[in-house]
Amino acid sequence: MNFGLGVGIEYKFNNYISVKLDQVAFHDCAGKFAGMSMINLRYTQNLGVLGNGSVGMGPFFYYRKNWNIIPNYMDEGYFKISKNNAWQTKFVWYGGELEHNYPLRNGLDLSTNILPGIPVVYALASGLRFSNSK
Image (cartoon, rainbow, N blue to C red; front, side, top):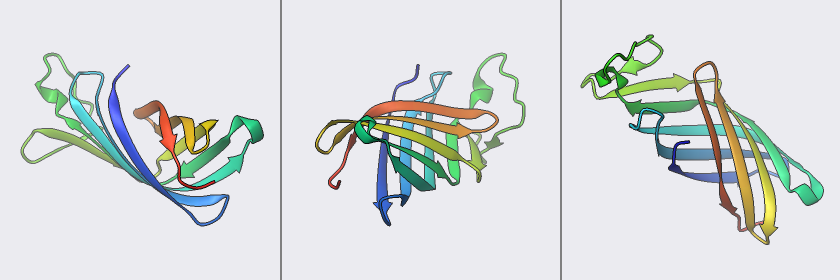
């Protein structure tokens, strides 16, 4: 389990369609600083007393401190190396997001997100979602 912080902002066109921008920073499984920026177009469905669920598609940019300095690390060439050799990056244009928001009280939800960046980068996150609208 890796701990981090994510911030997202969502603009709703109507009750079903929205666009969301996310920024996440965390320590990856090698203990290095990593992050991800994502924008996606989302469809949301009301699930009654279970809250709501969303599915989204859009590109994301993943970055992490270079793992090539780790002894015995075998670089498979999936990530691009920065010019200063400090970072590894990957732009994925076909990223996705699955989200479930369970209502705790008015304007506060327990939120669980899955961000699949097939075939290598996956993120599962859980936290609180604050909303100023219904």
